[in-house]
Amino acid sequence: VIKMNNSNATKCVYLDYNGTTPIYPSVLDAMLPYLTQHFGNPSSSHYFGREPKCAVNQARLSLLRLIRHSSDGGADSSSIVFTGCGTESNNLAIRLSLLSSQHKADDSGLLHVVSTNIEHPAISQCLNSYSAPGGLMPKISITYVPVNDEGIVATDDVINAIRPNTVLVTIMTANNEVGSIQPVFEIAKMCREMHVLFHTDAAQAVGKIDLQGLADYTTGADLVTTVGHKFGAPKGIAALYIRPNCFNEHGRTNPEDGGSVLLMGGGQELGRRGGTENVPYIVGMGRAAELLLEKRQSPFGIVDGWEYNSLHMEAMRKRLLFYLVEGLVKDKSGKLTNVRTNGPTDPKKRLPNTLSVGLGGIRSGELLANIGDAVACSAGSACHSSSNLMSYSSVLQAMSVPPEYAIGTLRLSVGPDTTEDDIYVAAQFIVKEVKRQLRS
Image 1 (cartoon, rainbow, N blue to C red):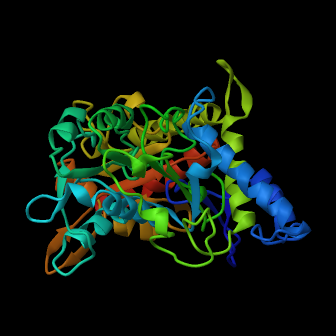
Image 2 (tube, rainbow, N blue to C red):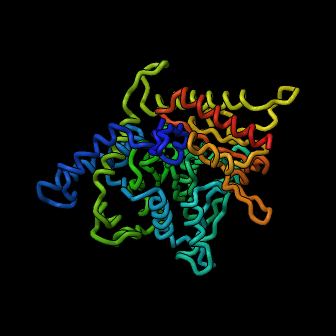
């Protein structure tokens, strides 16, 4: 439970872990020495720069262990570039891919990119900036492959969208709204065989599902985005994995040979990103990654930290759905009349912590406003009224969620620290407000 700082000293149950996570205590402990004792610039050659430089390199290795098998010797620490946020990592991945592959332009001078219709705006808006008239160069055309009604894209549909001038496929690992997990391992392997760069935004997946092998040197993704504040590190730190030599293959020209392509400056991050490294935050992200691979005792034996958390979060999600279903009205046949879960029904195809639930006859914006001091969650829709028109999440539209449920959708995301008491209290507040709206 996150204590709110207000005059009533109330407690608000936090169910918005997909939005951000608290900084975990051992992560903060790891960061503090680099805010005090080890304050030096890692680019400095003198005594005060040595420890920060070692710490930054250790954090790179810790992140690599999350996304590649320990037996895979193809990648090294230089394949991790630290950035300021997931948006920067995604923008950098796209720009590097386009600049490296201009030899594949078609007769109209266009490169081609394949993505899906449920990507984060950090992907879709960046791509659109290259396709818009007068926008960024080089110019591209985009194929947005549609997902099914569970929010999952078919591997065959993605591969069939590839053309002779396709230079990049970029698909999120898991969706932030409904938790659908995309077949990125399969797509990565196929893209490698077709000599097309593959990028995945894994921001929502880290710490929730097994990602080892995602950056496998021979069959994995070429580029992977990870974001610290999604798994217990601070906001303001993220990373982009870049497979070694991926921009020097199959006729590509490495755009980084001349230095950074986004932030020009002092040549930090091995010349890939100007700007002094944020050492405390980098250390925090590295420590958060280490926690996910530390062994823990579970009811099913010794497991990695991420799996231990996953088992707990799945149990909390299941309990939360149970309380909501039990608390809301059923018709005479026993069928739920106003509850719909969005996303995959198979737990193996969705994130263990994410519950997207559509509440028929409810406006999620009004619900959130009325429970916001008791339950911290988010709407699965950007619901507003303007000229009698209703708009809602493009992800839910892409999944063909009926509008009456889309405008009443809540995204409830639990975390490793969520308790059964949290779930019970949150469910009671939500059920009470739903019933009030249905009566009014």
